[in-house]
Image (tube, rainbow, N blue to C red; front, top):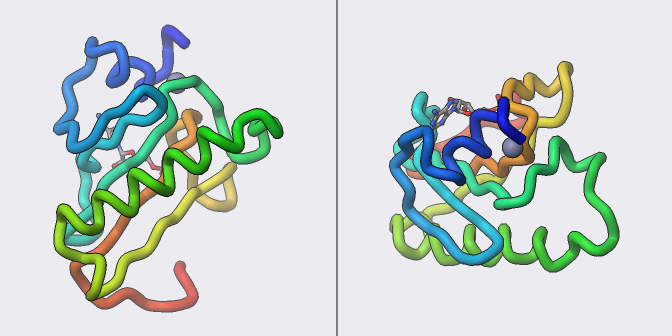
Length: 114
Ligand code: AMP
Ligand code: ZN
């Protein structure tokens, strides 16, 4: 999608600190980190929210979680703990309409989330 920020990161027109890439997924550091480790994992395909996923996207969703599993090892938070969050829609505070999984870690987190 031409007017999508994260599609711009995928096609290289917008710079990002990319920490993981494969044929399905891209991951990069959040520009406003909310924790010592704050990475966004996104599908290369433009999908707006979880609500827009199709049954055929199961492999894509799995690839996102496998990327998360690799990243928590690489960033040293596999043992200390981490959180994966997907904000969908206005009440959840989604600001970028390209599905993204926040991977957060490196500090104690509260529950429930705000
Ligand atoms: P959400 O509020 O769940 O839609 O999350 C969007 C996230 O994208 C926020 O945490 C922003 O800090 C992050 N963000 C926005 N622009 C960029 C960018 N150019 N590079 C990296 N992260 C970004
Ligand atoms: Zn997009």
